[in-house]
Image 1 (tube, helix red, strand yellow):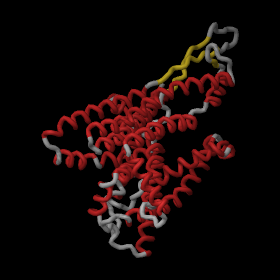
Image 2 (cartoon, one colour):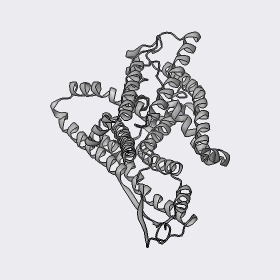
Image 3 (cartoon, helix red, strand yellow):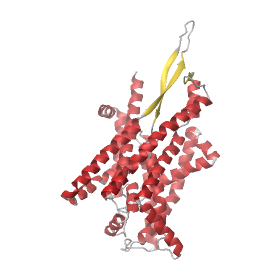
Image 4 (cartoon, one colour):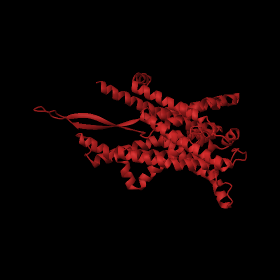
Length: 425
């Protein structure tokens, strides 16, 4: 791996792409540390420390909410908009046709996603402000309407700027830009978390953290193992004849199908959907209608139950792994391309039978990958229940995102190197 990275650094296009992405990450972290006026950051930090749901929301935004910076929402509205359009594509056939219409269709979907991000950012920023008003300790030192409008406009503009930066980063083909921004936020908070951990750790807790480190290493190995696993489907191509000479037999090849075709996206989708009910319920805990307040409290208490949370987290990771695989994997197109190139899978007829066979293979290998990824996702929650520390749950989610993003970026860099090696020859 290190040889590939050193080789990538020697390629001008890849090196420039890496430097560009690194520069964008630095700009993102600078913006994440520019707080908006009229917010008591000390009271805000206490409010987040006392609420596990908000702690995960802060993690998901890349640590920007805790500082209430100009990019407080991070890329969460853009991810929400992406989820909405992907769900709508499964409901409305016309939207699915547009999505399958090659690069032109994808551009239209991307444009609509950007447009939907704006109202979502406005709604989410307003909801966040209303949530902060429910704190027992005043967080907003200035709550007049003009100041609230200024905060909403600033946060919405910050989200749109991050969305644009993420798309520019993706164009450099060294990783998914949105995932890299979340990755940068997690990594930036690592030094302070470690220093705080070491400062509050006594001799009786060392065994707990050694065990946590062992779980973290196992999670890293598991994510890499699943991400690198693949099934090679044999494909036979007829040998072409030229002039009076003809070849006997054919040329053997293989079609690699990865166990995890989706990378970090299922984890991000699962966390975002899991956070949604709790965040919405926070607004209704003090409702004047008794049954509404009771229902909101029940939702929050239920999702704070580690068993319920773990089951839902595991189920959503598995579901979204299958869901996103169905979006990125198109067996009909692959079968059509194989047939056009004069190829076939031994024992399988060309056309629809080939597509059905590829779909069945992907379903089987995705089941193993999805279950394994779900188990890795809930492993920190199991450790948290056994050891009684909330840090492990948050750290486990961070590890999943960080490792998945790194693996995805390395794959894209390696593919660029491979393409340039073929260009040389």
